[in-house]
Length: 132
Image 1 (tube, rainbow, N blue to C red):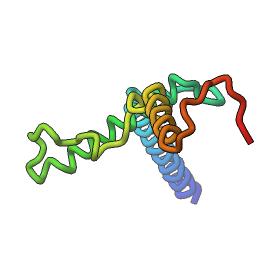
Image 2: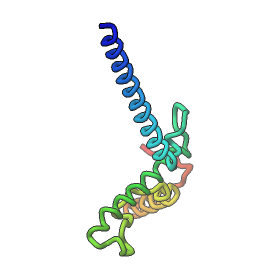
Image 3: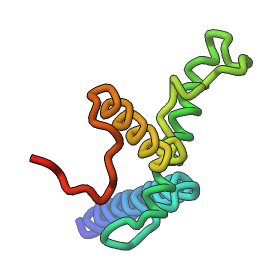
Image 4: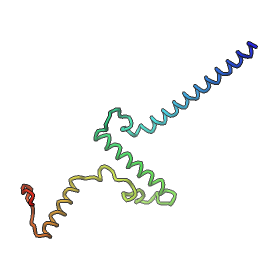
């Protein structure tokens, strides 16, 4: 009777060891996957509470590259992969460089000046206080 009990105990120990080993292998595989995914994603490796401007810029650019690559992969089966327009700006997410604040401000100022001229208000000086 004692020999049978020892045999079952050895079996249970072997099953526990096998389960623990499988858990360690799965954990190692997942850590390797995360490391491979994070190699090109510096913002994932940051340990700060809040991201800084460089982290945000890197994330936006990285996501734009991924979206562009996805668009190219989706366009590839239709035979458009070799065309020069595949993955153009119309089909991909905007990159950080697309947001030129100075150009947008100039366009806004030009539109405002055109509206003021159309209404006959003339050019507004920057030092003039608001009327009304």
